[in-house]
Length: 343
Ligand SMILES: Nc1ncnc2c1ncn2[C@@H]1O[C@H](COP(=O)(O)OP(=O)(O)OP(=O)(O)O)[C@@H](O)[C@H]1O
Ligand SMILES: [Mg+2]
Image 1: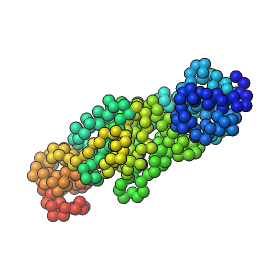
Image 2: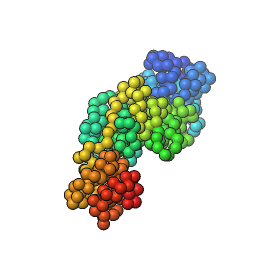
Image 3: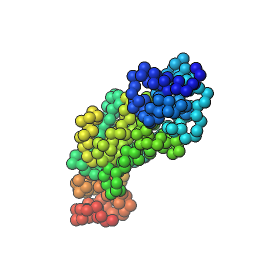
Image 4: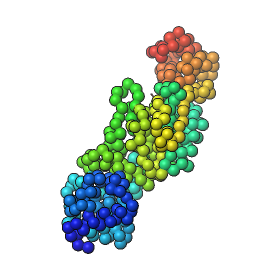
């Protein structure tokens, strides 16, 4: 094969059609833009860049002789510009990563002394048997501080071994004081960074970046945690779409729009049970302090409305003031039910 003018474009079009892919499909799988593919097929771009050539061959799943012919059709004059029309790792680099040498482990630390939630952890584990499964962890009434993030992170740590290709985590800032929600474009750049795509090799358009993200996750056993999502529109572009991946989303909203379309498993959290709340306090304050005043413990749990966030704040303050009895703390809390009691 000579690499004559137009030969590569014709070969690319023939291979794409044989694989029954549209230009859009090929763009998503390869990480190239639709325009770059169209320009190559029409011969407007005569020589593909080396990275692009191998990405196309991978995306078209060309093997052996067909792959060799495809590569030969590009000729010897492969363009070698450092900024290829779609940048990204060289194929060897990708393979090294998929060989497991660089595995993103982006989870925050597990909550120390995580209490209860056995049924909810088991419900999340059912995702493992659901190819491409996703779960949305929400709270009854959209409650803040009920433990959505803590549950997702705890589970993700528990099942770490199920995801040898890694875990991605992003806080989408959908709710809360931190201001503006993160856009899907910003989130995907966080993920591509975690997947070690250097900034100067990012595809130019957001669409191509999302395509590259999905290509990198295709066939990988990876967990994606999308924390604190605002709405379905923010989340949908970030779903990897590969049956080998799993996704856990947390949100104060029910994200019903997403559930309708993507068949995600809803998991609605309530506040802690009595026993779970007691376990939370015991893990932070020690059994002796609780046993010294069981009634006070009950009162504190009730003043905190069984809400993990409130219980953690009170437990942290009680831990700093070991001179105060729990009875005193419970009385202060009853008198000043806002959480700045004995601050
Ligand atoms: N089961 C639990 N055991 C121990 N601590 C917990 C548990 N659940 C939550 N917490 C603690 O309670 C606090 C609030 O939890 P978390 O941040 O997960 O709430 P959230 O529902 O994600 O809130 P938001 O809607 O603001 O995102 C955190 O400090 C967390 O560590
Ligand atoms: Mg949260």
